[in-house]
Length: 76
Image 1 (cartoon, rainbow, N blue to C red):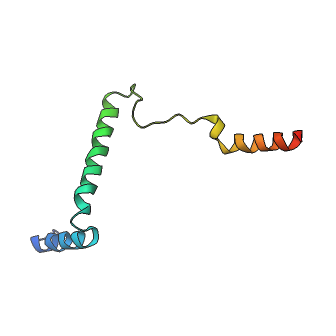
Image 2: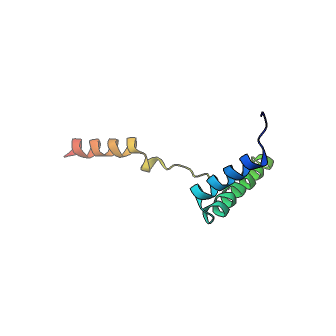
Image 3: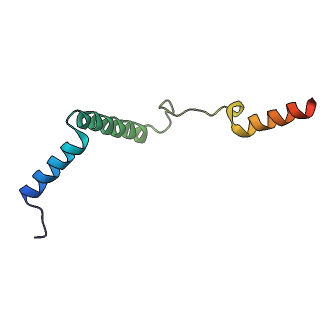
């Protein structure tokens, strides 16, 4: 009773297919594979920062925008 029989796995598979649908599962597995590939690539060469990391521009920060609004209101 401690291990799952083949019937338990079949029921789990049917439930997963009903929940996700047969078209969603390949997309989901492709996304997982892409994530694993990117993870392995970044582990292998951590000095390469060309992956999807973006540098945040300080001009776009909310604090900076609020400070600009305050400066504009003070100058008028």
